Length: 308
Image 1 (cartoon, helix red, strand yellow):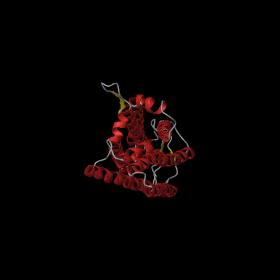
Image 2 (cartoon, rainbow, N blue to C red):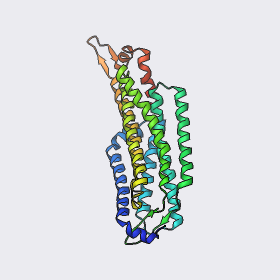
Image 3 (spheres, one colour):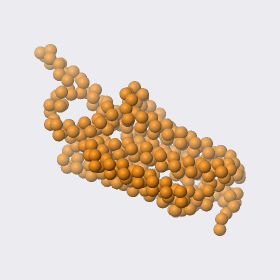
Image 4 (cartoon, rainbow, N blue to C red):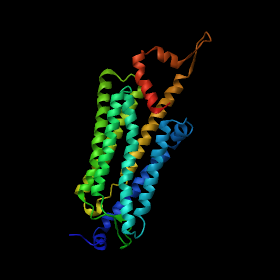
């Protein structure tokens, strides 16, 4: 039995207010992370060459910010028509998929670099990514509900979907599976590095950052999955803003941390060592001589991955 929008809004007012402020909190987190990493962004992104890593960073940062601004605008807007809310819910579903695919490209490149540019592995991961995107879109076509534009009842605002089917949560399952696979690749690499050594500090950082990223994304997907299935109707969208904030924040962090670390290592390798005989040696030359070609392969893979 369906509930009239106004009656449902009156009953769920407190839940919907929590949803509004949860979306606002996700934007605050995103802006806070932007503020504390802005100096690193200027140094490694704005002043750096036009590379794939830079383009991915700028796209991820701008897409995450613009998506959260749209979420805030709609969430705190007054009465909206069913047509507008239907379009908004479709935009929300597709935009979450785009955000996840964008940052998964970053993680995919890191897995490719960690496994010494294995082409077969790359093709398999690209196929998995495409399958994930298609499966998510198919599920959304079946389960994205018609939007419900609730009128301003006791200052209630935004678009909410009290009739949203619980099975809509299934659209998160392909992304969850994809993240688990990528995470397992990095966990295996971490275990292998622990047993046999990583060969370079860059590779160690790449693997450990990627594992942290995977667990954060898995936590967000799992939270939204549980909310859709178990939470009251008024809270069904309470964690949706975090599907933009966490992936985009963590994706930018993955790129910045690697660029920061590689830039520092490059600077150290160009320090001139002065000897008493007025001979100068580059630290990079000494490092190359102290490692075999096989030991340096992971470093070269990391360099290719970040484009510097």
